[in-house]
Image (tube, rainbow, N blue to C red; front, side, top):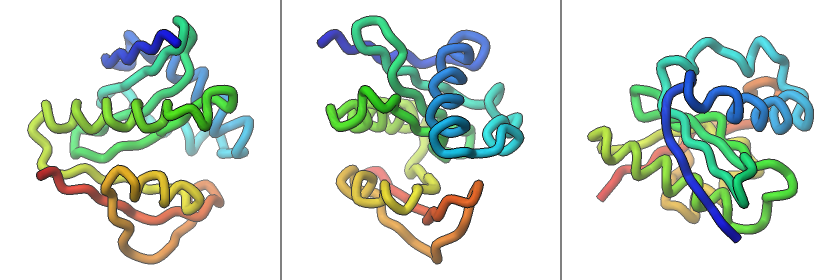
Length: 140
């Protein structure tokens, strides 16, 4: 399996990243379009994971070290691609000088993020009618 991970701005990677997010968040999870397209993308670093040249996963890193919009297409799930994607985003955060990263995890995904070293905190809250918890990871 040929795996490629690219990072860049929205102008460069936006078309591929938005197609993945549309499929995963808007179509599968029924997130309203106005919540998914929050206007922050032009200020973020985007990471795109391709398998055999096909866009399969994406995430974004906000300027404050917040990781968001982590998505893997259904056919790519369960193959370790999410781990590779998150490792790439976390490395980009380190390169940008962040000492910690934060994310809002859908509650079903908390064990995945815990395996990466994230710690959940605070109460469960709804975002786009999906239960979430805040999570953080401080780099060593």
